[in-house]
Length: 234
Image 1 (cartoon, rainbow, N blue to C red):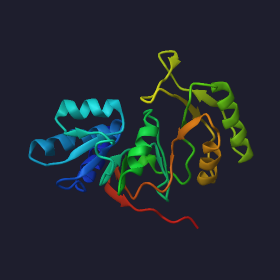
Image 2: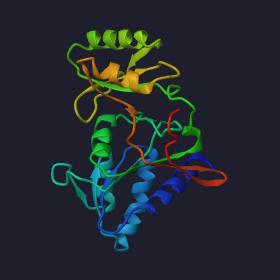
Image 3: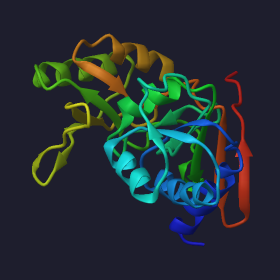
Image 4: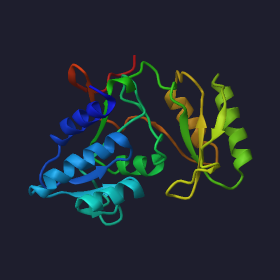
């Protein structure tokens, strides 16, 4: 099975957790988009749900396909969020933000009673960090913020290039009007320590470490679907 087929199978398995009347957080990215397409078919057949999107891109796709949508202000408490991930470790800590929506994804996940992450097996890792960590930052004082991120990383023994994300040669701008810095720290032994260190930098709006938010991971490979729950750290 190719990568797209695996994403579809993971999305199809996640759809089985969606129940009538749910208030549903809907993620961003290629795997989440496959979920939206399958969800839309269920809606056309009579499933009654309301969605809250994690990005303008997802919002547009949902409305195009006829998925009923709300906002987090109108629907501040959600039953379930289904979203993809760039990396998943055994504790179900995630790296997210490759699609640029990490701030809204985290807000929506936090507002949900449960979060399910969907992915293909290539996203499973022993430790987070092979995928550059997206860090959403304020435009003001960008150089100072990047220097502070570098300093905080060094205190934790983490080093590597910090790259401002670009699109068509210009800084990528998130739905919230911020920039993203992709931090190639490599293996992150202590994700909680890094999370706290990054939150201590005033120019950091949010980072792509999702710790303690995912309750379930649905992972597809050529042998089928695997359902994972968090393994407690020793």
